[in-house]
Image 1 (cartoon, rainbow, N blue to C red):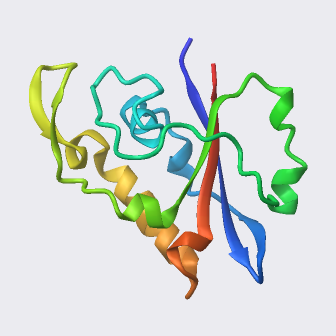
Image 2: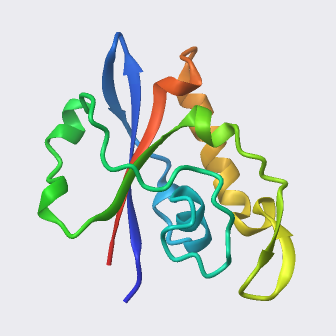
Length: 143
């Protein structure tokens, strides 16, 4: 049994959150990415440094209508959180750390693999003139 992420993308338009289709690869099972997105809290066997906030729960502001209907509480989701594109773009992806799986120095550029940077580029394309803090991913995990 493994761990999966349940991601949703939202963009703020006229003060309200609207749901967008998440890049398909955002749902890929990638444990280094899970550790990165949760500040090292989910399956951090690689020793990914905590560069983002630890899980902060679901957003307390008004979610998009599509996500308000999602049965967040009806599945065994854990470590729910959300991150803005601004937070994701501010990360130093060239930072080195020791990958505990192979006891070798590496960077987030290597551990997160090219698909993560495709995801970031897709999210930037979704902005369409909005500020980077007006797009967020909301996610939780299940087994």
